[in-house]
Every structure is written in C-alpha cells, then in structure tokens.
Length: 149
Image (tube, rainbow, N blue to C red; front, side):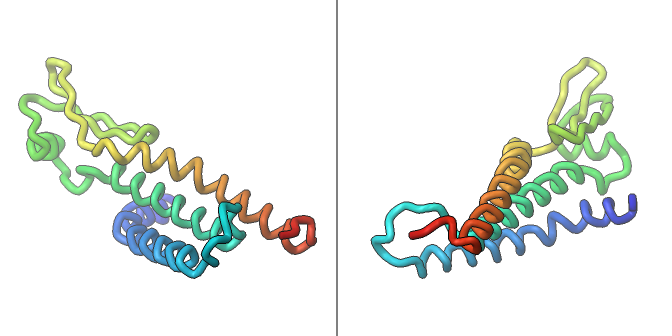
C-alpha cells in the first residue's frame, strides 16, 4: 500500500495536468454547445461530475507537487542551497498545509513549496465533493422527474 502511495505521489504531477486540461476542454465544449439565451441555471450532472474530476485532479497534482518539492535531492544542504538559503539547514516537512522548509540554526526559514499549492489543494478538497454531491443530486432529480424545466 505504501508503494502505491509513493508511486501515486511521484506520477501525479506528471499525469494530473493532462486530466485537468482534458476535463477543462470538455467543460468548455459543453459551455460552448449550450443554447444561447438559456439564462443562468444549475449545470447538469455531467458538467458537475467533470468539475469534480477537475477539482480533484488539480488538488492531487498540487499536493503531490508540494510534497515532492526537493525530495529528489538526498542531501538537505544541497536542497536548501539550491533554494538560495545560506548556512546550516534543518528541513521540516508538513503534510497539511503542504510545507517543506529549510531552517537555519539562527531560526530563519526558507519555504520551498510555492504559495499557490495550498490554496489549490484546499480549493480542490472543498470543490470536488460539493460538485460530486451536486452531480448526484442532479442525476437523481432528473431520473425521478422531480425537477421540471
């Protein structure tokens, strides 16, 4: 199980951009094909499911990118020096919020994870289940005939 998680985190930054781009294109096509003048309305179940996949893939990709930041270099001093930090270094890692920090003996820290990673992770963690729940509600409402247009 641990090997699967490591493989997922290793490959996620490479695969998720393709998933995000594919679902974004599918959503754009659905928006383009929509009837003009139909006004504002809730998206259908398929669009909500695509949005859930998009948000989940973006969150997974950003999380993997942040967690694996600097992981490929075995020596923490080399990793920190590559980030521009000077002096003796201790590397601290946190899973949520995603953080990899080089800390000098004087207590000065240099964050290696870009600032956009955590907002994308948290946004995806919130948006994905909401969109999935909306997709389920839309599909069950349209199959029973409870919602009429």
